[in-house]
Image (tube, rainbow, N blue to C red; front, side):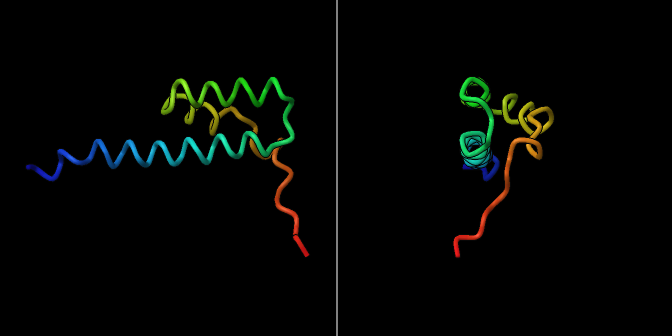
Length: 71
């Protein structure tokens, strides 16, 4: 089998992992529940397009409070 035949599976895995990261970031943000639900559905239903739209228009810096130290 040609090595390029496996590229779809690898790219699919990369998109899946990036989608999970984006959805986790949305859920942990300080957005409203409606906004969290809509962004998560967009990323879930349209994985590549939703991911691109979220990273371009999601206002990630505004809605993520950052990390706090545990100790």
